[in-house]
View 1 (tube, rainbow, N blue to C red):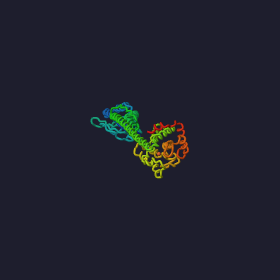
View 2: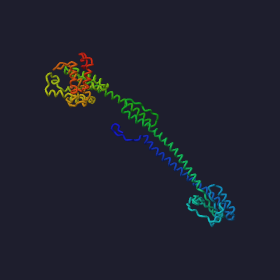
View 3: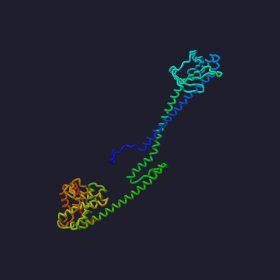
View 4: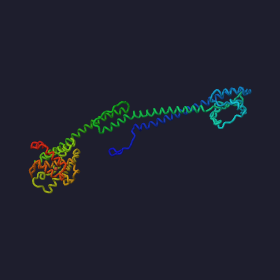
Length: 459
Ligand SMILES: [Fe+2]
């Protein structure tokens, strides 16, 4: 998008940047904590399972020693069956003799068989004299505990007890589901919390940013409300004070510039009036040209500011004549070619004078062009039609009309109607046809200018 001739690239605001920075950080933190909680809890569950199975196996081993030595198979079977029934996750309980032949089992069919090896096995720890292995039997994952049976310091057999890991898996899945659900809720809260936090931090900064932007063009300043008492609050308070100082100084500077401009304008008005007064025939000329120009400008719908500039340009239009020598300016006889050239240099001379003051430079194009003709036959640049500034076209009409309706050394003044006929005769050549028509209509509607009016317009 083009703004002020400069392409603006999309740039996220400070709120979005803060939000974009904080949210991944919070997300990472929550995921890390959830992962750590899951790992610790699962480790605890697994350790509890291992320790519980080892404890049961040890109790069975302690209970089985005497019965095994005395050959009381019935007691051993009952021990195996009761142990098997004591917890739902116990898969089997087997008591083997030193030859690894099963002498008691919760399943009678296993009696007398060699204790079979698992399909796969990996050690999971040793708890006192009990060893725990994770094994696979008949496609099921089990934790198998092996505890030696000792009697009077002599090993007489082995207890093998297996626990199912399904309960552990179920507990782990349930745990993970709860952790994921809790994490999602915390993430949602963190999302809105981060949004609110980013907003809380950046709103005062955003207000400051908008205030700084508006300070360049604003005439008045409404202090930013301060609702916080931290560094941002102090910054806002200081900004409010600074903005008020800047605006007050700006207003002072504007007023000084206006006064300076007025002083310049007044000075040039005096110069223009003095210039008119050099020649008794042109006394009050600039003022009359200004009045007629403004009258036409008003009819054309110009606002007050534009009329002010038109009036000033009209007052200044012949300023360059200050450089025209008296013997040329006041000469009553016909001018020589060189003298005509000297007279014709006054629009350019006027612009040189206006160029010296920055406030007056805006009038340069109009002053330079006030002797240009609509058809391009004028001077000094030979511009034509719409190339000639509208204010210059208006002043040209008023200038010609005033020159014709005042006495000159070489001729008497024309009447108003005669002068208007001349103007209309030159429409399309010297003057814009539309402006010439409008000027004639205007003058015909104006009250006749008597001697007193002319005198009152002289200075
Ligand atoms: Fe002139």
